[in-house]
Amino acid sequence: MPITFAVRGDYIQLDQLLKAANLVTSGGAAHAAVEEGLVRVDGKLESRKRAKLRPGQVVRFDGQEVTLVAAAD
Image 1 (cartoon, rainbow, N blue to C red):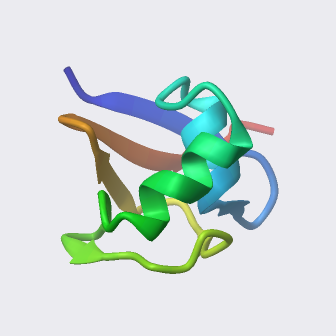
Image 2 (tube, one colour):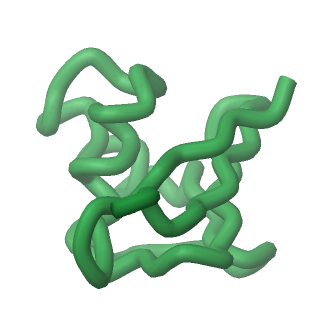
Image 3 (spheres, one colour):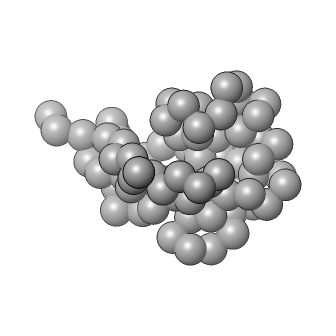
């Protein structure tokens, strides 16, 4: 089931998103997932743990899809 995540501000870092969306239990687990090549952003493998993600992007991890949207003011 797809997840929609509202980004407050201009961006959210990939490791923070994985934790905030409850896809991992800790920041360390988020870093490990990225290092192991388990995370895709817009269909491409993402190797930067702190990649800046913006509304409109789609993250895939562990069978989940997270679509980023701008937070309502």
